[in-house]
Amino acid sequence: MLRVNLIQSKAKLGAPLREAVSGATSSCAPTGEKARTLTPAEARTIFLGLMLTVFLAALNQTIVATALPTIGRYFNDFENLSWIVTSYLLTSTAVAPLYGKLSDIHGRRTVMLASIGIFALGSVASAAAPNMLALIFGRALQGVGGGGILPVAQAIMADAIAPRERGRYQAYMAVVWVTSGVGGPILGGVLAEHFHWSLIFWINLPLALAAAVTTYTRLRKLPRHDRRHRLDILGAGLMMASAVLMLLALTWGGTRFAWMSAPIIALVAGAVMLSVGLGWWLVRAPEPFLPLSVLAEPVMYTGTAANSFAMGASIGLVIFVPLYYELVHHLSAADSGLALVPLALTTPGSILSGRAMLHMRRYKWVPEVGLAVGIAGLGLLIFKPALALWGVIAIMSVVGIAIGTVYPVCTVSIQNAVPNHQVGVAMGAMNFFRALASAFAVAAMGAILLAGMGATVERGGSAAAVAAKVGNLEFDFASVFRWVFAAAEGFLVASLATLILMEERPLRGPEQGAPSVPSPAGGGK
Image (tube, rainbow, N blue to C red):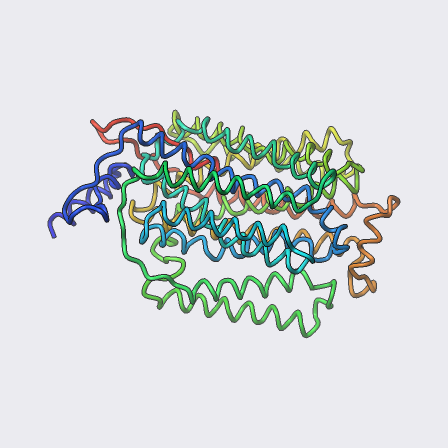
C-alpha cells in the first residue's frame, strides 16, 4: 500500500512519462520486476518506427480530397459525396477511445498492427467498390482501422518522452506531415485525372505492409505497462447511432426532405434521445466509453475543444476547396491538388508551436496569434469569394499555418495535465472529439453547398440537378462557396475562443539525473 501511495505521489509531482512507464511492471516480467529505462537510442528507434505508420494515416487525409470531384462524376452522385469522408470519420471516431484502452490491455505494438491490418482491408474494399454505397461502406471499414493509428501512436510517444522535450523531435515528425501535405493532394489529383480514382486506395497496400513490418520490428523494445480495462461497446454504439442520425438529418434536411418534415424531425429526435441515453450510460458504466474523470479536467475539455474546432475547419476546407478550385477557377484535378498543398501543409505552424513549447513558459500566444490572422484572412475570402487564384492560395497558406499552430499545443497540454496512466485514454478521447467535429463540419459544409446549388425540396432539386449544375460554367459557384467559407470561419472562431480559455500550465520536464530523450510534439497533430 505504501508503494502504491509513493507511485501516486510521484505522478502528481509531475514525473515525466518516460520514467513512469519505465517503472511500470512489464507483462513479460515476473511480478515486481521493473521494465528497464529506455536509452535515448532506443527512444529514437521507436520514434522512427512510428513515422511510417503516422505517414499512412496522414496521407489518407489529403490524398482522397482532390479525387472527390472525379469520384462524384464517375458515379454521377454528388449528393452523397461527403459521406465518403463522413463514414470514415464516424467509424474512426467510435473506435478511437476503445483503441486507447485496447493498447493498455494488449500492448501498443499488437494494437497498432491490428489497426494497420484493418485499414488495409478497408482500402481494398474501397478500391474495388462498384458503386457509391459500397465505397462508403469500404471507407467506414477503413476508418475502423485508421481510428487507432494516431491515438496509439500518440500514446507510444507519451510512454517514452517527457512533455517538455517533445518539441525536439518536431522537425523529424514534420517530415511526415510535410510529405503527406505536399504529396497527398498532388498524388490524389494526378491519379484521379490521368489514371483511375481507385489507385488512391490501392496505393495504401504497400504502405500498410511496410508500416506493419516497421511497427513489428521497431516497437519490440517499447516498455509494457499493462492495465486491465472493460471495453464500453454499448457506449460506442450509442455514440455512433446518435451521430449517424444527426448527420443524416444535416445531409437530407432541405435536400431529400423539408427541414420541418416528419423524417427530419424523427432523425433529430432520435439523435437527441440516443445522446441522452449515452449521457445516462456514461454516468453509470463501470468503465465508460468516455471517462468522466478525464473529461472533468479543465485543460482536457478546453484543449480538446480548441483542437476539435480547428480540425473541423481544416478537414472541411481540405474536402471542399478542391471542388471550389475546379468549379470557380476551372482547375484540373491535378492542378487543384497542387493548389491545395498550402492549406494541407500545416507543418510550419506546428513547428512554431513546438519551438515555443520547448523554449517559452508562455507558449499559447503562438496559436492565438496564428488563429487571429487565419480568421482575418478567411474573412477576406468570405467578403470576396471570387478572389484571384493567387490571393486564394495565399489565404489558404495562412489558414493552414494558423491551424497547424493549434495541434501540438493542445495535444501536449492535455498529455501534461492528465495522470500518466490515463494518457492513452485521454488521447483516444481527444481524437474522438476531433473526428466528431470533423464529421459535423463536412456534413454541414456539404449541406450548405448542396442547398446553394439548388438541391432543395422547395426548388424541386435532385442529385441529377446538382450534377448538371457542376457542368454549367455560367453558374455563380463563388457565391455558394462564400457560405462554405463562413462555416469554416465559425469553427476557427470557436477554436480561438476555447484556446483562450485553456489554462497555460508549466510543462513537465525530465527528472534530475534522468537521461535526456528527444521527443516528438505529438506528430504535429
